[in-house]
Each structure stands twice: as structure tokens, then as C-alpha cells.
Length: 268
Ligand SMILES: Nc1ncnc2c1ncn2[C@@H]1O[C@H](COP(=O)(O)OP(=O)(O)OP(=O)(O)O)[C@@H](O)[C@H]1O
Image (cartoon, rainbow, N blue to C red):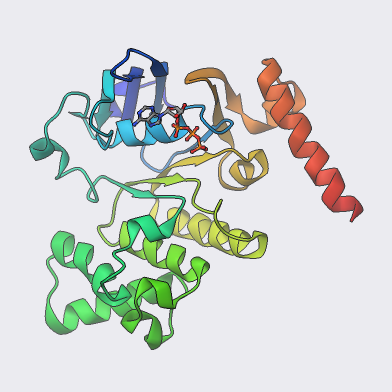
């Protein structure tokens, strides 16, 4: 969160999202992210985290209306048409979602899906494209040649999420939005994927907006968070400070339940 909003890669000011019936799903949310910075959005299910990530990338479904301002690399996303949004997607920001099956095309081999953003954004063809795809798969730990030829249903959930990460990064985005990227995975695979994301974000100097309901998971990826409840930011700051002295009762509850889980795991 920088002092100088004008240079931010992502600059969200007083974002609101409303249903057609006028219900506010997100209200008066403001934050910014500079190149290479990380920020966590944490909150219980239904608190508006995913709606925020969709609003930020201009992907809100029909009927949901955004208000306020979202500047992505200086371009206004709120109210923008597809024509101005398409060049931003991938090149500026990419999203990794909770369920990789929704991001992957079930009828297309993994290798082709990884190739598509690389060809589109980096203009590679033929042998150079094949080499770049092999490198992209290798980078996410999918170095088995079988994976490139497989369809999504032929590989494991963890491998699918690795492939989804390779696709999201193929366009070389400067901002990665990870929306509960490990929630659908078992704990061991979750730790591997978090480690992989951490390494890749670091190696490429990407900014990261990391969304989760799980304080322990968020604290593995970022040191700064916004706590959301009912579509409103109830608290923000360094995780270390929130753990020590949560100001909002809801944050205190999040900290208590994370500690209880930790104790339970420690005792087992
Ligand atoms: N298209 C939509 N139309 C109407 N309401 C919606 C729509 N999409 C989401 N909502 C509502 O907006 C609220 C916030 O949803 P959102 O998915 O952002 O929550 P979340 O914090 O990401 O939760 P989860 O962790 O379960 O994904 C919820 O009450 C949800 O039912």
C-alpha cells in the first residue's frame, strides 16, 4: 500500500459493487498495490473477496454494477468496455482461481492451453513456442512430458492448479491475483502450491493480491492484509500487528480460530 497512488499498478478507490436489487456486496473499498508488492484479502465466506477480485479485473457478471474507481496500470476498469479491458488481462494482471477445472478447457490438452497465452502475448510460434511451453511447465514442476499431452481430467487436482498457474503466468503479468488458489487441495499439496507461487512471484518481481479465508495461508504469502466482512474492510495492516492486537472483534475471532486450529494440529 503506497503513499503515491498515481504510480500504483493497482489503485482501487471507494469501490462498490451492487446487485440489481441494490444490495451492496462490496462498499467503499480502497487500497493500492505497487509493482512487486503483496497484499492479502482475508474474510469469511461471502465477505466479498471474490466479487472484489472480479471487479478489479472487469470480470463481474451481468447485473452486478461496480462504482468508484479501479485503475489497473493507470487504465480505469470501472465502466470500461471489453475493448479497453482485453489488453490489460494477462499483460497487466492474471487471475488464478480456486477451482482449476473452471479455468481449464476440459476438451483441450494441457500443452495447448499453456501455449495459447504464450503465443498471444509473446508472439512465439513453432519450435520456439514448443520450447517455451516445456519451460513454462517445467517452471511449475510439471516436467513429465505426459502432462502436456493430457486432458485436464487425466491429471491430479494439484497438477491442474500447477497448469492453471503456468497459463496465468504465460502472458508475463505484472500483477497476479490468486483467489483461494489452494482451498480445493489437500493440505500437503496446498503447501507445495503456496511454495511454488511464493517462488514464482518473487523470481518475477510480480505484485500479488492473495485472497483467502484462512489467516495461516495468507500469512505464508503476504505480511500486509485487509480484513473484509460483509463487503467492508473492517481492518488493515501488518499481519504481525493484527495477531498481536486485533482492533476489530471479527479480526480477533479470525485470530482465535487460527490459533485454535494450530493448537489442535500441534497436539495431534
Ligand atoms: N452474481 C451475483 N449476484 C448476486 N449476488 C452475488 C453474485 N456473486 C456473488 N454474490 C454474493 O456476494 C456476496 C460475496 O460473495 P463473494 O463470492 O465475493 O464472497 P467470498 O468472500 O469470495 O466468499 P467465498 O470464500 O465463499 O468465495 C455473497 O453474499 C454472494 O452470495
